[in-house]
Image (cartoon, rainbow, N blue to C red; front, side, top):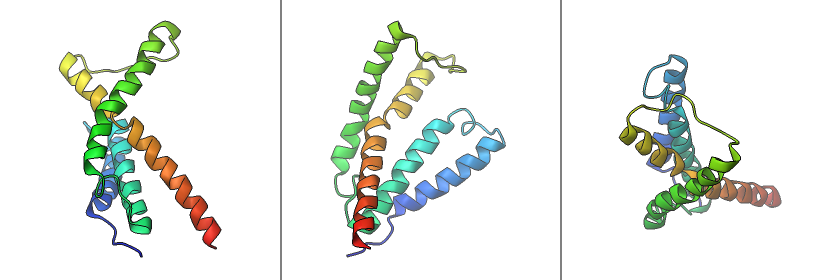
Length: 134
């Protein structure tokens, strides 16, 4: 049974489209925070596509779980950041000077880790399922 394409998917497509336009025009906050706009758009779009094809949505049918993943994603990514303190494999440039803005940015960016991973995994499973159906 195919479902309709959810509204949050349309928002994701529009947000990604606008973000890319403003990225190339160097308009803030899209220019400075493109990573956040791109990942959250991707999560909205892929969730809507999976809902359209399978009727399963982390956002629509498991909303509480979706929002609980945000702090867990942040926590998991901060483990990698802690490991990087001694590894020194990566560093960030052009971070906001104000601590509150910087940590809010971390939370928004790193809050995508679990959702992005799970949505991509669902997408690959769906792709395999669609290939089998042919």
